[in-house]
Amino acid sequence: MERILNVCGVDQMTLTGIFRTFIDGLENYTLDSRGDIGAFVRESVLTNTSQPDLLEADLIRSVLHAVAKQSTERRNRMLAPNFFSSLVYCDPTIPHIEQLEELRSIIPPPPLDISTEKECFDLWMKVMRLDTYRKAVITGLVSSIGSLTESLVKSSSAPFMSYLRQLVAENKLDELNLVTRDILNVFQENLNSVRLMPYIFNFLDHLLSSGCLDSVFKSMSRSLLTLIRTEMTNGVVDIVGGFVLSPTQR
Image (tube, rainbow, N blue to C red; front, side, top):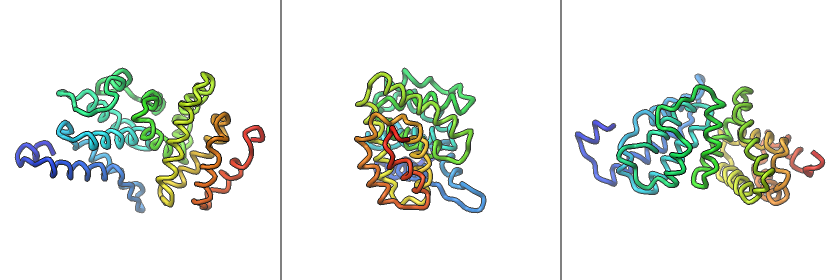
């Protein structure tokens, strides 16, 4: 892509259109008999995107959020973090990156020394503490914690549940409420999503049964029940079964 831009030259509107197409590519989850063939598109975007320093603030935000989400999803957990790090440490510095200094205090320069899923998720739990990136990280975690792969569920849910329990232990209920707000927003934005809804229900099942949200359960219960009633699917039964019980009854 960089060679094309250098040779042909593009105006700002064209460049914006190119990057919006790339961002759309990160949402390609096409499935066929071979499985998740959309992964090839997502990986291609991560390896061929260049010159983000020319983008405006809203697109920079969208790119970073999309890559943060990819970093905690089922695939691309090694490729996406390295790409995210390359954006954070780009020289010259990319303008408009929100909470840049905080990101640099958490994420090392590329290449990242990440060899296991646990190391990857431990890193992104720290990023999730930043308001700007919390929802994007949670969106990716939904498909990891909500997956059917036992090893992935364990490696992603353990640091997330530990983070939630730490918030409760430190009486940081305001921050915990922000996490639940973002979880509910992810649910709301993906109502009727054939692809993501099974992961959301599995994610909620793990979350509610863990007891991590008992202290804020009452404040989120009405909104959650409304969303569940709206999205009545086959996978909802177990969630409702755990949901209608009070925290002390579970």
